[in-house]
Length: 596
Image 1 (spheres, rainbow, N blue to C red):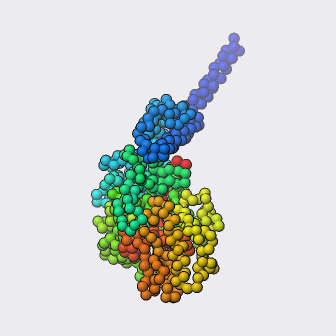
Image 2 (tube, rainbow, N blue to C red):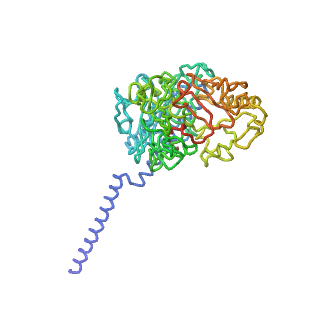
């Protein structure tokens, strides 16, 4: 009996231990679930997220195909029903997902899945503000720790909002009233302001002239080519800035000011300020009232722009986000929007101190008038970005727009005349170039322009030491050749839409010698220009100069600089070689989208 009693007590002890272990396991499982660390649930969520993103993209492709088949008259609001009606073979989600007026809608009872659909679909959906429909600012994937939404009041005072709250609030933008959406990213002290350009299609009634007109704009829905208001886009061009490689974008975030660096007060031995210099060791900042980053060649501009998504960069490491040097078509997207009813031609930024031992260009300034020429540091007529006159230097005429697109520094855009010129290999980002041409896999980061046929045949002058077509004996003959090559290249620009070149000018200038036989060089329009007559620039819209197409200058500058007054502007363009200069700056672009 005694032994038997001991056995009973032994069994009870084992049972107790097992019970405790089971309780611990169950408690751990509950904790894992509550902390969202359950690997099974996480895998299910990841699969659902991936499937929803894929379904959304396929719905957009369906709409695009129907649009193409029906000559741009397809009505997306007629897309209603089961997911499998539009994405064949995908039937597993018919019980919890459906299509309503072309958009994916969650109808199930799982809160988490509803949030996932909202995250993927809701943040890129259209919004109606002031009777105008367009894509609301895409805050998807932007890290909440480094991103804040900026709200400006009537006195140009800035307040900030968390992105989770701002995504459901439209009080910080109103494009019908020329009030564009602003955010900033700030990581490791590197702060950058950005402005939202929603996806749109455009129509220019009289392209290829020097007479400026209001550009017709129709905002598009999501990443589709369907007008947000349901109207036809027949005769309109989908702006190419919203296609990044194989990815369609609902819009782009552009730098609000010309780029500055984490050492913007950097000067050379003479005391001239260049805001950073030719290095990739500094971080990009985008701020008002600071010296812009200049004296850096275009390849390093691309590198530091891409570095904004590094651990030390302004955005910080994140997925589905890309930062890069602004391309020419992205410049064009801002220029066309500001030339429409939703923007305004910006005043010139004249801040440029060229006095002895100094060269100082600051961001976010205006002068006393629209076409003010250069004003030295300290001039009483310099107006800061948040003053009554200062806001006129933005693309909206108010503080919410993009600054420094007229005057300030010349701005390099990621653009190349892909003719094999040795400057391409020397000054562009090394890993993006092979045999002095842009590699196919990196074309999405550049606007690549084809040269004229004579250049393709290898007869043109490429860099130092070349002769061929250029060795014609006298200035007049050389001018004829240069003009012919430049004109052929400019004619090829006609195939590029949305870049504010061919569509917003009626010709080009070429870079050559005066006919007097001197060694003077100038931008010329004709082959018989004498040095006594001086240069003669081709003008684009708003009297902005247009100096493009020269074979030996394969890179492109936009906006002009502080000292040229009415020659500067959003349609100004100049060919150059790609190297660093104390007058040449840049700005980055931030793109957000799945799989970037």
